[in-house]
Image (cartoon, rainbow over all chains, first blue to last red; front, side, top):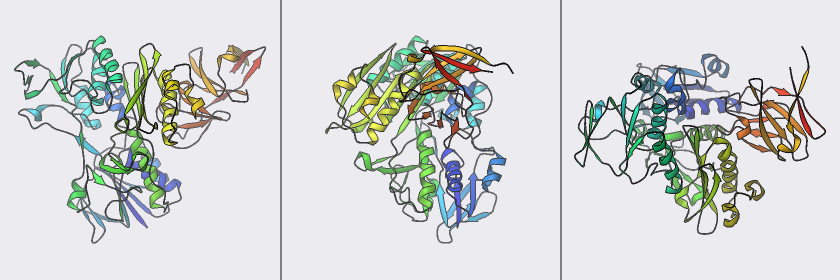
Length: 398
Length: 105
């Protein structure tokens, strides 16, 4: 059997590693558009931005040991499902028996005048461009108070930049985090000197200026857009695969073509623990878990993908972690951990725990969110009073 | 090489089936207590991305890194699968009169 994997991010690399770990002995090719070794993206907005390179996931020697034919700096240009070939930008092509699409996502752009001059952050190249701008006293405007925008705000403050964050919604982290948590995040950024403009619309950009819809203007040495990402589905769409907010896959991560799987940021999948709700997650853990699962699926495993969604973000000396699907909850229970740290539990109608989020020092929240994740996976219905009480050990509820 | 046993705190400072951070002489260690009151010590930082393991969850004899969920058996230091593949160094740890004694070389 010949397996071709398109996309050499976390998900794509993990498919290759896990296939070999599970004894796959066929031909295995990994196609990576960027001309460098696969690297971890989460540090791009944090420590790696200040110095050095993002950590490499697998180097040439590892690929040699694994028997993976890694094509670096080569893009897949088309999938020919009739002949089961992937066409490549270098003029060549690769035959496959099974294909895995791990093309990820790309930063969303804004359809506004001057938006092309704004920076975005997705790749190591983007990071190096941004690093050049991070001088003491430089004025940065970040559009979007999501994970990327706020992580960058924290990193830029550490470099002495003057940072303004412009957000259209009424609170930060609007898409991923309920106000009980996001208010703490916002307060910390303000305490660090970040200017946050909420409910602020952007009308357009000039090279050194952001025009807001209320007529005001923000001067900026550079502007960064952190307004979300769109799944990279061009190859899949052109090949006629079913799409649904990304490449639509089933619970074994198989697309509408039974010989093609999709994993990571580009794939939307139904989650059996959340009523079959279709999710598309832009997160390291999801990329890792789906990469491993896809390898098992390729090797014939019949079980369903049901890993609990899990995100983390580091800002200053604080950490945000969210496990589960907050939108699946109908009520929330707050647990105060002291020193401005908090856990927030989301319960469904039937009392089932469906999500837990935490903000605080890593040592305050990581264990608790991890136990919460296990409770979610077990369909536990923990006592709300105990959830609210800092003295009630979560581990005892397992 | 000289053998040095240093005091690392009270045995009861570590909860049952849990882990505690201990810093000494510019190094950081993780001290573990199993649910049957056996004690172990390893390097304090995950071999993957230098995260403090004491912030992670102990389940049985497994410590899980709080960032990437890399797992180690803390009784041996063995890495238990991706993304971690480098084992943790382990150190002798014993209890004397209710105090933890850690051997550092």
